[in-house]
Amino acid sequence: MGEKDSQVPSDLDIIRRVLRGKKDAYAEIMARYQRAILAYVSRMIRDRETAMDLSQEIFLKAYNSLRSYDPSYKFSTWLYKIASNHVIDTLRRREPHWVSIDDGGPDGTHTIDLPDMGRGSETEAAYGEKVEHIEVAIRKLPPAYRQLVLLRHVHECSYEEMARICSLPLGTVKNRLFRAREMLKAHLKGVL
Amino acid sequence: MTNHLSLEELHSYFDGELPASDCARASDHIASCAQCKGQIDELARLEGALSELEWPEVSPAFTAAVMSRLAPYRPSRLPAIAAAIFAIATLVGGTGLFAWGLLLDAGALSRVASVVTATSSVLASVARSTYLLGCAAARVAEGLLATFSALTASAPPTLQAGAVLAAVGLTYLLRLSVLSYRRQRPA
Image (tube, rainbow over all chains, first blue to last red; front, side, top):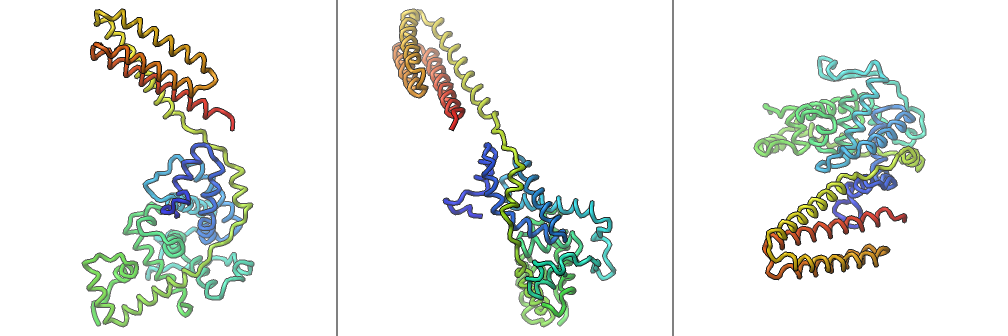
């Protein structure tokens, strides 16, 4: 992000300033990534208020761990990894019926009845009907599949980045992503 | 059409992740197979639909809530400590080498006198420039240069090396002091 533009400080420049004690520089990091993180968390966690709280906690965690950031990888990858871990931990804690992806049916598909938490909210009302169908279809995916679809198609991560974010082997990432897309296609039959 | 592409091949092809060796074969097959072509088209429609998803707007209160909970980092002192150790080691080593050179040199006493004179000049300069550390550094450098010049004539290599090392160490220490003074000065 803006790394080629000499006028715009790179993420690493800003992080170095923060580590030198310039706390306020972190607001620039937040300005760059808060929409992306909130978008990701909101689609992983259905409750908007919880998603807001979790997103703030993710930025706090990232700030407190800045010294452990390895600049040989993109900052966004590191941030998404923190977000992914935090969200998955929360889902495991808060949703006792969190479904393992290994519990798939014989055809390899998964259907989970999730309450439509967002239905009727102002945000979703503003969405077109097709987009709402897609949002619902994404929510029906198991979290481990959902995050890969979001990272790949909404946040434009590469396979390698997804593997790093989710701490999974590359082959597993591909396999899960392919299956997730097949499930989405099945959910969205007649919509696409 | 038989020998359709596997699901994994189709998705990898769509993502541009199929190995180059398999890509031409997959491309040829898709061009002539309506079923596989249909799968690729469906993936393209899915990707197009997913790209329509929006990112939520974030209120300034979101950022403010996080920022208010952050404590500023304290800059690490490790580099400064390492630099100070290096400077002191250089200074001590250089001075030791210098002293050793003096002991080995029969005509050292006359040069010691020169050193004392030059050092006095340096100290006087430092005393006059208490409030201006930058100027003091310049005077010290001048004094050291004079000291070095006085020693270079017919001095053995040990003496010369010791003087140079001591000068480098002292200059570096002074530079650290000036930087530290500037850093600690309130804005």
